[in-house]
Length: 217
Image 1 (cartoon, rainbow, N blue to C red):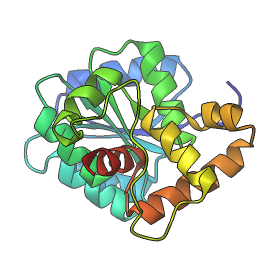
Image 2: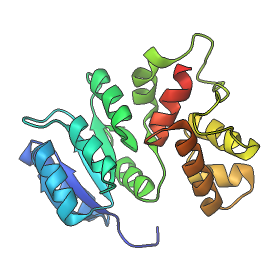
Image 3: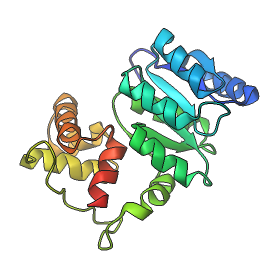
């Protein structure tokens, strides 16, 4: 893949995990610019280093990953990619509302993790299907199925255009910006504009938050 290497901040309370992640990511061309052992340090280092992506653990002593994610997103310091476990459904739901751009299981292999980081740095959302099913289960309307995403309800900021609704349908299917562009026959830049409009009209903090809002209606 061409282009500059994404700049990443690692936030995890286990030093051995951070060291392993650093070695793995740097071996695959990712620029690890810093580390943090808890949420407070993650926010402080994000302000100082301005990474493209913060790779965020959710369970950390002191300040947790959810409140740190919220502040990082509110200040537009970086996008946040959460590393989660199967036993963290409640935390994943909180991270969605906090504005995390993506969720990946801690069991992900190096190639999957690197691809996810590059996708988030490029403005795409990343939702591991297993995480998504569990995290959004309580918010789904009874008639919604995984194979047939719901139609968008009326947005808070004005009606969707036909193209915006097409884009939202793609977001609900987990499509990347590139996949949306190919499916709709438009440029990735145009897709990003429509995604931004959709998020603004829904009052959503991220693509995953938009999906949760629509599935709850």
